[in-house]
Length: 291
Image 1 (cartoon, rainbow, N blue to C red):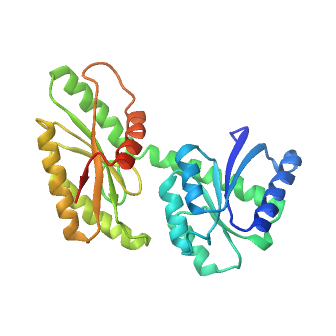
Image 2 (image 1 turned 45 degrees about the vertical axis):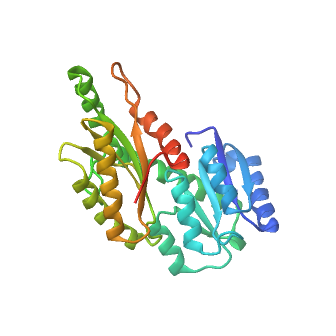
Image 3 (image 1 turned 90 degrees about the vertical axis):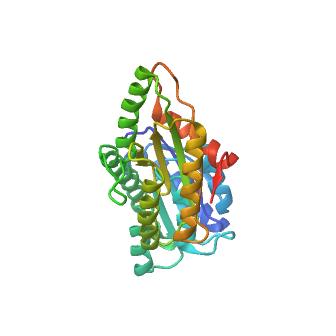
């Protein structure tokens, strides 16, 4: 593995199962060469809310997730909330009993693997974690070099940031006003198929709410970013308000939270870092709410 030390988040409400899994991880670490394993640090929590709190504040290499938690009894909902909290982190589901149909559905949703807790053994667990991390790394690498988002047809994160850099340079050279925004859609379905159908409609409405000159990209499962040569902030807010109202026509409860990002009038900037810094500020402080 590329990382010398792995940070694992274990989400398990059973004290007995939590102890069993921690013991297995400790044994794997003690026999590192045997399992091709480096040292690891485990953070263990027993509530979904605590897991999301941890994911908001730290980066983990993998999440071991018990899908039935005291504050989230719906298995797919538990996974969906973890995925939304850390969309780039591999998740391995933990279940009490084998259910092939559910396991396949969870894998379609994006989980890297599903383990039956009573069948966990050191060797297979080590391989599962290694493979989950490597598959996620390769998946991220493939997405990173793709210019377009397969679902919406908008630019991917990589494509958006590449072209946004060109737009920013042009705006700086010509002195034109430019607005960059991060938008997050709330109220999407937790079912993957229904969510994708909604996102297709959301993408069409988003395209119509802003001018053809607007650069639009999909950042992740429910977030979009755009760069527009808007004449002023008021024009941007008007477009965003229209977008928010039209979301309600697609499905009651859909709304958009976001706001504009300040871009430098001269010099280089790290747009990728700017997007990541802007996202929690807009979502948690609700700088702008439309819909």
